[in-house]
Image (cartoon, rainbow, N blue to C red; front, side, top):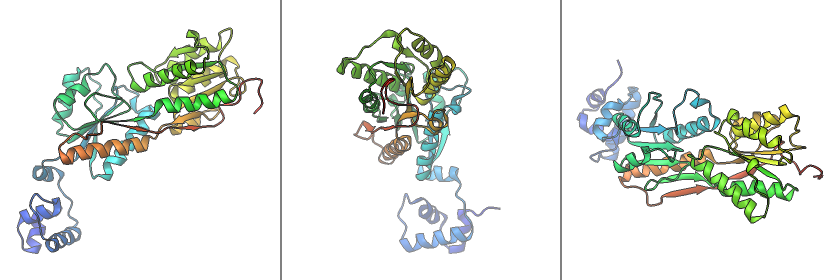
Length: 342
């Protein structure tokens, strides 16, 4: 039978409440010598704290809810979602907390979803890339529940984002410097903040450099390889196809590479392709993908840190947005424009 705080109290000849205060850091102070002795006996007895009992003392569940942008059967197969969830779990674990992943696939409106989340008695919530059409962030904000957003901007909630525009400009600067003048773009669903920001940056770059912006060179995808196929095929079958295509994420880039192979378009000799995210998936493609790296691990650390500050101080952080730098990673899917030597 596992040891309890009563066993520790009996061994030391002190009250159960004193042991509880020593193990939980309060709510009343305990002399350092008493605290040291309690911890020593706890180790000797292999005491393992009961999280429910500790929650009754501290008023905290030590659990953070994590909500992905949408719940689908293949959600966890997304390299971005998988990498982000792993990073959040690691960051939360550093604070001694657990995560509760919201995975209910049953149809549920936004109000019921929030009620479902809060019924789990979590201390805070991390929203991963919530859609602009979702009312979940507003429902959470209205209830004043500690919540931080990753990869989106929500009025009234702190957020951590990647610097999408700088990343897109870095990729296009490299391509432009190497002779490319015909640029295509396969984006993501406009309900996603990152998808909108990357497309806006692409358009702005073309405008600032007085490069052609053709409707047939821009396609909307859905952040999956399959969702990129139709748009990429239309571009590469056009009378004057682009020599470089930027993808809204690495999975989208995989769909572009697939179409290029089917049509006999050589990457990177005839076509350069650049992704976004730099998840491990990018190096599994053939050719290995040049991409814009967003610091997913650091984004998770920053977001969880902001959330823990809110939980501990019971006040929303003053700083509402943190934008972390991106980095262009060059691999085998990019080269000088056709007809130019390196």
